[in-house]
Image 1 (cartoon, rainbow, N blue to C red):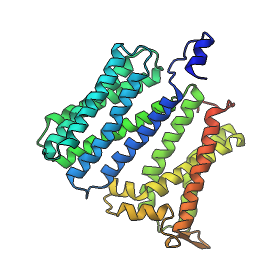
Image 2: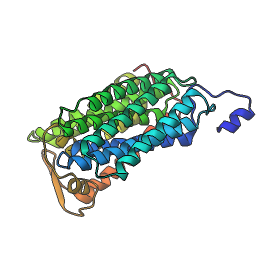
Image 3: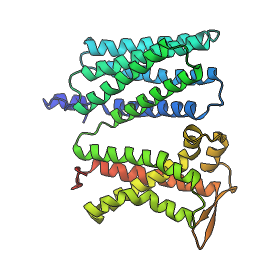
Image 4: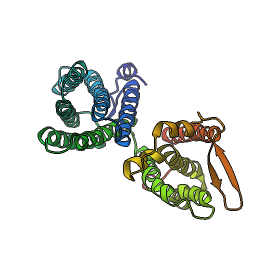
Length: 342
């Protein structure tokens, strides 16, 4: 139901209401920001100049988000609307300055990016103070804004730390802002959706960090991949225990999401957290099926093994993305007796 329909019916907008196109934009900008931050964090072999320019791209995306957020305000001339638009324009102006003058020192660029991030942090704090937002959204924006400002000020003032370290710190802040943007765009409207969002975030963290930690080091166990699949699904068996088999689709989709985080984030996490130095582009080409029938690894099933080619891996990844997307969208939208207290 659009805003015009709401007005024609004489209804007020629900708390936290935002146009669907704006929510989609927040999700896409947030995902793009996360992607850039992950590339920066997972590629320490890049030169510092290339890293900070990548960060500038991500910060520019957040600047666009600020302008759009201020532009949809019903009272554009309000303090919040003007602050968000002005802050976004200031952020974009700084990024244009960075790109327009490639001769300036890397230290100066890092300082300018810290200033841009501090502006964005203040924008999130201003957004948290605005009326008409859901309480959880105000809390999320406030926490992100305070953390962003604190870290950005630290980076701008402390020059004794290595520039690469400062760039990594900024990348972490950009990553956090991107995640917050995705969550803000999803904007759950009831307790059931909030619970599902928490389960999705847990599944992503579980797959990216815990499962990848095991998968990077523990591959010598007998029938290893059978145990790995069971480990994907294990945490979500609690849904079956407490909810019964009527919720098996949700439990299955969350387990598949864990497996996706494992297969797509394997060496990203290995390079970032565990000191691996795998070339990421050739590896991701193999995972997505671009290396044809080249065998990537052997599936260890105990009594049997299966050669997994690049094409097969790619097809399984695309298939899981489709299944997870459809099932989670179905659970997100349809009313059910799902117990949101879990």
